[in-house]
Length: 429
Image (cartoon, rainbow, N blue to C red; front, side, top):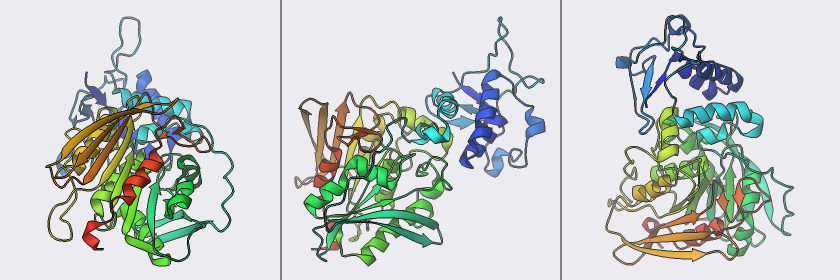
């Protein structure tokens, strides 16, 4: 059944984007109770722009299966209420489950508990991170800031104790909603692996000013393109670390969780010259959504239709595959596991791959299916892990951080292994 979204739903969306969650929640509660204000009285100049001018109509028809939006649609009654049923209860046309869940999250959690995060590709629940583990002698976990015309973001950089000035690989880690760089570092234990393998790890931090729940804005068109918005900031942080520290330019990688995973997919597509490989955990493909309604639809069922690869020609002029490793759990009720399939499909758009399927079991933990995609030369270029029985959390992570599933398999170790097997071929030896 289609849902009719009055002007008040659009206003609630605008308030949410501006971080005014209390006002948005009140407006959405009124919508569900059937206490709809008269759109004609409540309309603002933004609301009265015609669809022909490139704006959404004041009343929208959203297909809950596809997320497609159209209009105009029938209005509520002159009283501002939807017609009532035999028991006097409102019989407003049913809202898509993701949007109803969005209201529930505002009501039940709110910003302090991360209630909105799940609705924006973030994390639904988790424990508070514990005190940070002591650093190995000689290691550094330093704070930095990058600023440009696109804005400013802070970050944390881990420099392992083994660093002696030689050029090291660099991994960019993008946290999920409500998380912080320190929390994400604790949960993924990437810093521990950096000690083992000799890597620099940088954790850019999203701000509440940019998103009330500190989600990377993966669903915003302005934040899905090269040299603009948040991609420009993340790339700027990457290049600043490369400038200030000894980094091997052939071994620069990006990975993320949930909203951060979606942002990592965007970075791999927008900056194939910068990142040698990508890791996407519980995320979505680049371009999976263009606004909040399509974001909810993509999270619930995957992008419709699947987005084509956005990667441009390689340095030699040919089209190449983005080496990508994906982790997703089949019981993820926040971001549908079909999205992991679409990340792989987007990266594999160049075609001609051979597939091998392996199955395994973590002792005392989750079973998993691992699908390997190799090119004509036998080189592994794509790898997909489906965790059976897992939810929306970093696989194999530590309980020291939020939103982790210690029952494995170890996504951090497998991602880093995959990364180090894939230097940037277009940058020479």
